[in-house]
Each structure stands twice: as C-alpha cells, then as structure tokens.
Length: 269
Length: 262
Image 1: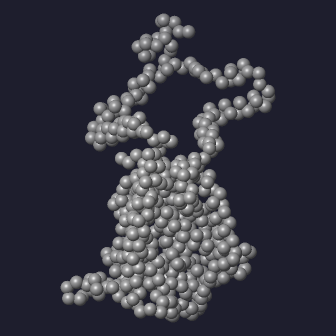
Image 2 (image 1 turned 180 degrees about the vertical axis):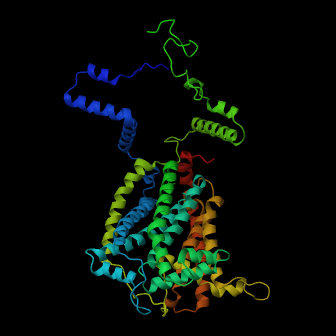
Image 3 (image 1 turned 120 degrees about the horizontal axis):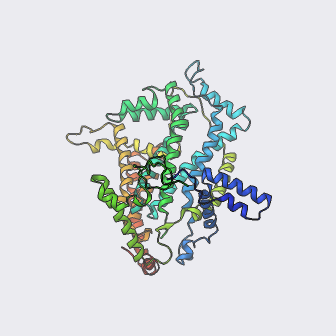
C-alpha cells in the first residue's frame, strides 16, 4: 500500500517494444483505453465462446441417436412451439404498438344505444383510412391467434413427452400462469373494439367476477371499473392490454426461458 | 528512496512512506478472506445452514460427476444455445411468413357496434376460450351436486368458477404426482390416457359452449361431454398397453443403457 504507482502490466511499454503499423497501434491503443475503463476483454471472451459453440457440430437428433427412423414420426417441430409462441408474441407487440397510434379507448360519441363509439370509429378508421391499417389489424389479430394456439400445443408437447417431470415442476407451474395471462391478454384485446361481441363477452366477465365469493365485487371493480360496463371498463381493459400485461408477461416469459436455459431442453426420450 | 530517520506513521513496518494509515482494517487482504467453510463455522442460524447446504450440494455434484457412466455428456438436456436456438430460428422465420400470409388471406372480422340494449342471440368469445365458456354452461349439473334436501350448494356462476379452479389445480398437480425418468407415452400408458382425456374434454367442453349448433338434446350433450373423454382415455390406455410389449425390448436396450434408472 504505497503511494508509488505500480503498473504491473505496463501495456504502453509493451506496445512500444513491438514493431507495429499505425493502424495496429491505433487499434491496440483504443482497445487498451476502452478495456481499462470497461473491461471489454471479458465480454470479448464471452463472444468468442459463443462463436466457437455455434460452430460446434450439432448433436444428433434423437431419431438418429437412438436409431428410430422407421419407428417414430420425426416430431422435432413440436419442440419449437415455445419459440413460435414467443415470435408470435413479438409480432403482436410490434403490430400492436403501431395500432396504438390510432386507437382511442373511449365510449364517447354514441348519441343513442347501439351507435358507434369513438373506440369503434377509431377501428373503422384504422381499417378504411389508415394506409396498410387493415393489414396491420389482421396481422395483430392473427399473431394473437397463433400465439394462443402455439401455447396450447406447447403445453401438450410438454405433457406427452414428460418434460414437466422432476427438476422442472416450477417451470410447469410458471407455464400454467403464462397460459392464464395469455388468455387474459386475448380477452382484454377482444373487448377493445367495443363491438357487440366485445361488449357481451365483457358482460360475462363481470358476471363471473361477481359470482366469485369474498373477492368478487372488489375484483369486478378493479378489472371492469364497476358492475355495469362503460367508459371505465374500456379504459381498464386498455391499460391491462397495453401496459400491465406486456410488462408482466414479458418478465415471466424471460424467467420461463431463463429456467429452460439453466436446466437445458428436456432430453427427448 | 526513504531514509531510516524519515518519520513513519504506521509503526515503521513499511520501508516506504505511508499516509493512508496502513492496510485497511475493514476489508481483509485476499489471503485472509474467509473460505466457505470458514464462513460456515463463523456464521450461525439460517446463514450457517445455507452454507452447509451449499457445500453438501457441491460435494454431491462432484460425486455424481465422478460416478457417472453417461457416455455423451453429463447434463440432462440439450443445450439451449446454440443447438436449440439455431434450429428454432429456421422454423420460426417460416412461421412468421405463414402468419403474415394468413393475415392477408383472411382479414380480421368486424361486427356491429356495442349495444347494451340488445343481447345478441349467440354470445361467443374467441375460439381459445370455448372450453372455459363450456365450463360456465355446466349449470344443468348443479342440482345433481346438491346435498341435503335438494338445495343447491352454490350458484350456477360459482359452479363455473369452481370448475375452472379444479381444471387449473389438476394441471398444476401433475408434476408432483408423476415423477421418474420415463419420457414416452408408451412407457406410462396411464398418464398418456389422462392427457388424452384432458384434450378430448377441452374439445367436448368447447362443443358444449356452442351447443346451439348441435341438434341433440342438452342432457345427451352434457353426458357425452364427460363420457367421450373417459372413453378416449380407456382406448388410449388399451392401445399403449398393447404397444408397450413390443417396444419394451428396444427401449430397455437403447435407452436405459444410456440413462440408467436411479
């Protein structure tokens, strides 16, 4: 512990000793300058490891490994259903953000019962006036359908290949939670256009909430903003759909995939 | 550099001048940093237990690795990166293309604006909630669940909610009931039969939700809703049990040689 500065690794002296071109000197100087501050060498090592791993030979598929060619259908695509639902989720997120530029969560503007509201009109505007708008809405809706389908099939694959077993119970439970939240995502999105089916689907939602013992009325007020449907319901569904659920679901998906990453893909058969 | 008569502030242990009061008292030098076992001995209560467990589990890992006869690798799964990720990329990019194609060919449906004053003849959620909607239409069963003189125990809506709770609860319990290293349906016909029962039940409940489209009586429909899944489960069990005989020899030879059962 002395005041005298000791540079055990004198990189600059090492740099001078070598016979380098201007470009090499500039590169190394920059690298050393950055590395002293940010320790980028560690990250470079990580990248290098990833690069070599990616260039390793792929392991044999399980049909090859166990010589099952004529005995089992090669069902590898079923093992990518989890990724498929994430990709569908990303597509829905991007198209949904674009739709959000034009959508108005408001029931204003209906002179009489059954007249189009501002929310409904904004949907009509998206579908008829906005450039590429109809396609955007179709993509958003179909991405949602594909995501739900992929999530269900993913669950079946996990069940029938026994991938939920002993070290992976936590992820199975997490998956059930994620399915529930996905369905809630779909439900809240279904309400947003404020068309007839949206309204009456939400009505069933309120009635279900009210039938729950103890927390029913509280839940109905929290989720639907009261016992009859109106402006409050629409705004709450909107916030649920574009603010609350995206954060929660994205976080849980990250956790879900993180656990898979740590535990490895359940070995087929 | 420094003479012997230079005043020292740290008791003269160092040849060089010190103004920082010597080695810091709070952070121990590297060679004195307590090891895991030191910490275990010094700590108490929950912290000590944690350290003890860490050591045990690390030793267990080492022992298992030393004993392992597993030929290819000593992990229980395929690595997520890069094998699974890279293979998935091809399929997922194809999938996005399909999604956009379908969106272009079948644009989203749009209906009438909401009218609180008129209930439509048919209320339906999206297809993926049909099973849930079917659970809400079990109210004809409610009187049969009644005890003590025919007063129904719960309202029809509550019955639907309880049914949802049962479905999610049963699914959540599965990994705690079924353990072991078996991975194929043929190895465990019973659990495969349970799965098939669940899948068929989801479809029959969906059919119950859209009961208006079926020209059969409601009683028959509800009976079928529960009989068909059980029937499907029994058939699955019988088929897999029969198949198992033929598969068992190969399974034992190829599979348990690679992964010996515990």
